[in-house]
Image (cartoon, rainbow, N blue to C red; front, side):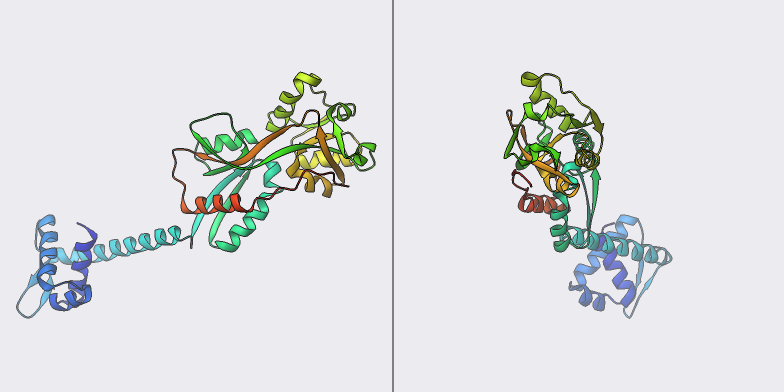
Length: 301
């Protein structure tokens, strides 16, 4: 059986006439008769009784009719559902983003996306960078947002921007009044860091090992917001990606350019290289690439 045959059968049964059914389906009566015959041959028996004046269902045709109607309704519903998803009238997309991005730059892109595609649901997984990569690799999300991964044929990286780490200091600290701070100056204070296995923590340790040795940490936390509050309270200093400047400022801390060395890394959207994105994921990727505008790395007073 195929959809064309079932639709022909249901239409003939409705009108009890090959002529009227042909007009409704916009096919000739001989072509319609051949379609019904092919269905009957495939099933192994007659579904319609034909006379010169009327058409009626055989007992087997009466059994098939409600089933055919149900199958056609399901088919039509499926066609409409997929059509709406392809045109983004409906849809769903999941994205994983590291907390620094999820809490700062992602909302502005999601707002644009929602305005364009109000019927598409977006699920955001706010996880550390390592988990972003794992979720993408295991196809639990279509898109991930994080630091550029090490060379991997399995992943495709769409760069958004180059992020540079900035110093986070208390508002009343002498360091807050400087145009830039050297790492040597920053590490003279109690340092507050994200806990391992945060990619931010590991990146800092890798860049500082040669010139400053092991990173001495006075306080640790899993949350950037907690670190910002600790710094604002005068417990110490920290270093975060520049995309967190606004968040740190709202928490009462100050951000200053950080040099010697300059620590930076590209941030972008990550997807599987051998996986075709859904229309919803493609649309979200386009919005992210067009509307991700990080704050410039400048001293925030």
